Image (cartoon, helix red, strand yellow):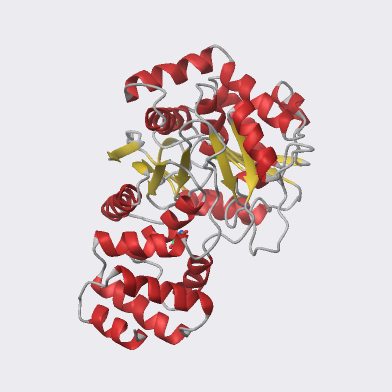
Length: 433
Ligand code: URA
Ligand code: CA
């Protein structure tokens, strides 16, 4: 087989075979196929697209390019959740203990974050003593005992994706549905889950800015998952404004604790129940999504979900007293209220602007090497649709530096206030099976 013939075939809009796709992924991972040929193929895929079969073959070839996590020692149907990313997305910290409390085994592999805030691992590390480096034996044992454990990413997962993603980033080929969908799904499948619930975000703070694009991506990922024998469902949810109130690592841990007590922000609570009930249903712990939801509401009201969160923190060496005393989490030196300059209604909160504001405070990483400040971040006091009076607080800034004029300007820019009454935005747009 020759790479040049494969590029030509895709350039002309023809379908590649499984053997051809495997040849490409294998050769590129090993370094036998140079970047310039892979770039040409990525661009051909960008313009000519791929069939569902091609997308499944590409995904599975990337899965097989590296290690695959074996979760077979864990009892039950392992369901993973993946979010395409957004601002203030605290869902994993809540959904994981929530579904574990109704018996769904949660074997979560998580990364450190780049961007607005840290990843789930960073957030959990704001709890003193919390340990994310576990051997696979300990990890499996903890999931069997407590139904939940979170481990930091290790090993050599999907090296083909890592290399290709880096290449796409500099060849204007990131924004291609078949390439994004296979990239995300290869990592999920290599992580070993039997079933997958995807939270595909849409809006200003999301990767997919418009609903149509989000739907196409969701459909592509659901088809790949099911084509690869993993039961997959996608929820399309709003990310035009940040989710919940808190953006920042320790602040989001506190928000997760509040939500597990049933005292969190309404949008975050609702999305967690939506995602969680799909997970419980896929794990066959309920006969319908409605029954799953009732079970989740029950473990919130009974306190069992919070109890599982506590057990999970303690089992991984963390200070579980933070759950009853969140003031033990890292706190910032200064808190500053950002006040509304007019009376009116909140028409929009541009999520990515808020994300940048949190990031420049130090809540997120600019590069993989930078340190994050776990204590800092923002707590939104007003969301879209809320009425506001001049001088009322829009946001509380938690900062470790005194001069935060740059952050305040970003927040004022993000908040759009109008004189007309504004309807709140829908939270869940669609569910794709
Ligand atoms: N996230 C990924 O993991 N891969 C992509 O291609 C895009 C976003
Ligand atoms: Ca949040």
